[in-house]
Amino acid sequence: MRFVDVYLGSRIQGWPVEIAPMFSTQIAQVDSGSEQANQRWQDPLREISIPQGVRDHATFETLKTHWLVMAGPARTWPWRDPTDFASVELDLPNTVPTITRTDQPLGVGDGVTTRFQLVKQYDLGSPATPYTRQIHFPVLSSVLIGVDGVDPSLASPALSYTVAREGGYVDFTTPPGVGAVLTAGFLFDLQVRFEADDTFRAVFRTYGVDGFADIPLREVLFCED
Image (cartoon, rainbow, N blue to C red; front, side):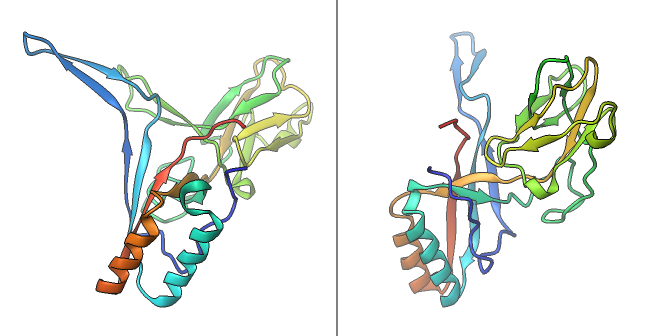
């Protein structure tokens, strides 16, 4: 398994951070000067830099241990984006908001389907089409599910479910009834890796010269094994 569910050591702070969702877009300009755009990726990949993530020797040792256990960029692990990690908008970066079971749509029951995907929608309103982001690494202890706005255990009939840490799937033991409105609230992580095989060498050199070093990471999109 490439994903190892272990966070970076607490000595390495996640905020402040530089993080940018990057799309892959081909722009073709015709003779008239007009353009055509080809969006190659449905979802962006985030480039991450933790400024001065290494500031002392104890932090350097924490990073070194994580680097060795993860075999550099070979393995991936969870990381919390302090600017976007909840089913609702944040009042301030790196501040946990109030989560409710009606924050985001999950689906509508049809009496047959038992599996639903956690998602977060980003909506500018008409005429723009909302961007729907699949949430693949929810924080399990935070997940709240709603069936017509109430706890599934209080629905009629009562429903039970499980949530997958890897994948973000909500699996009901019995299918929700026809027309049942399913919603969810949650916190979530990204799947990340170290930038490259020479990342640690660059960190070591910079830390040795300046007494601090940035830590570059890359998001990895979820893929079923």
